[in-house]
Image 1: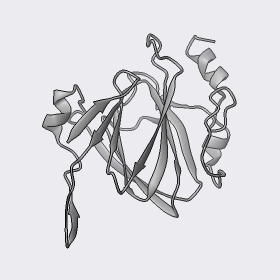
Image 2: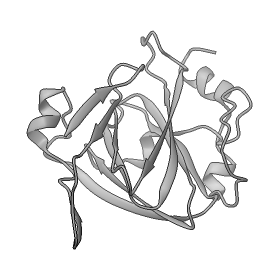
Image 3: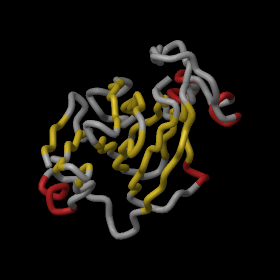
Length: 183
């Protein structure tokens, strides 16, 4: 598995090395030992979750307050445009965002450290996204920013077809900055 750090400290792309043959393919989707070599710890309370989205659906931008949450994200079926925004108060890349294509061809995983907003758009007819999260979900720590916030100006590649009521009513980037004491 190849592990590459991105331009935002702590955000990594993990690329497995699948073995293809006449039956299809086999790949290791996670290796804790390799992850630990790069400082990626998901802990003993890790939870795995999966979502299925139709083309054009946007999920996010979501994060956690408190000590945040780390997650390892991959697209098991289809393709998504995945976005992270750094909201760590003391980070030199605070407010910076990166975008990644995750799909079922390259098998790349995205490690999202605590202190990030995260969201994605389904690019294919359906897209299954798998998440390994480092701790149980606590709704009282939920953070969110609108998927179409003009200050973040995320250029979703497809027309947005569906968002949840929660995401449609999420605060603006400016409102999040105020709540974090940065606005």
